[in-house]
View 1 (cartoon, one colour):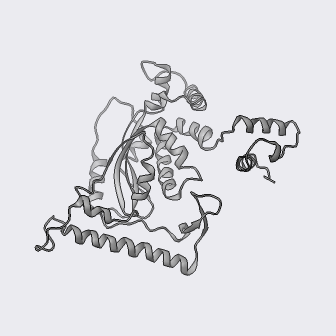
View 2 (tube, one colour; view 1 turned 120 degrees about the vertical axis):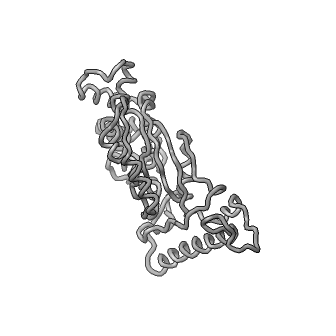
View 3 (spheres, one colour; view 1 turned 120 degrees about the horizontal axis):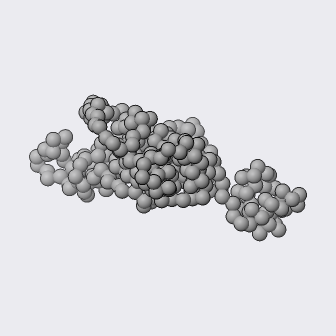
Length: 313
C-alpha cells in the first residue's frame, strides 16, 4: 500500500491536531487515530473517530452517574457476564468510525452487514484511481470440491501465471477504456476537444470488480463485534478476513476488556445445537454414538466431530 504525498500530509496534519475534552479517551487508540493500517496490496483501514470505552459499557449496564469506583476486576467480570449472556445494549453505547479502502467486490460483500452508517466514494462525481487488487500467488486457488463458497488447492505453474496475467490485463484494459470514455484529464478538461465524453455515472460500469473504492463506515461496538465474529472467522473469504483482522487490533486497543471477552466467548467459542449437546452428554457417559443413529445430518455430524476433536468415521 502506497499513500500519496497529499494523503500522507493530510494524515500528519490530522494527527498533529489536539483538543481538550472531558470525554473519556483511550490512549492506545489515540495513538492509532488516522493512521492507515495496510491491507491487501492497495487497501487500508483507518480509525477516524470513536466514542466510549470499557467503562462506558459498565456504566450503561449499571446506569451509574460517573465512571464508578469499583475495582477493574469487577468491571471485567461484568463485561464478561454481558458478553457471555449476549447482552447487546451496553455494547451499543460505544461507537467507532473507520475509513476503509477496499476492492469493490469485497465492498459488496461487506455491505450485506446492514448495521452501520456508510458513505462511499462516489464514481458519479469523481474518477476512481488506477488501482486494482491482484491476489498474491498463494491466494490463487481453485473452487473447493466440497464448499460452494470456498477455495480448494492453490493453482500452480503456468495456470497461475496465466490467471494473474488475465487479471492485470483485463483490469488495465477496462480502466484505459474508462478513461477514454470519460475524455477528461486530471483537471477535468477534455483530453480530446473533439469529443464530449461519457458521463462518469455511466463510464464507471466498465470497471472491473477488483478496482478499489473507499468509504467511511461507522457502527456501534455490538454490531462491530458481530461483523468481526463472522468476517474474522477462519471460514471467511481471505480478502475480507484480513480487513477484519486489522480491525480486531483497533478493538483490542480501544476496549481491551470487551475484546478479551469477545475473543473468549465469540471468536474462540462454538455453538452446539440441542441435539449436539445431547450427543456430547451421551459420549461423556460412555455411550458409543454413531452418525446413523444420532439424528444429525452427515454435515452436522462432521462439524460436531471436528469441534470435539473426534474422527467423523
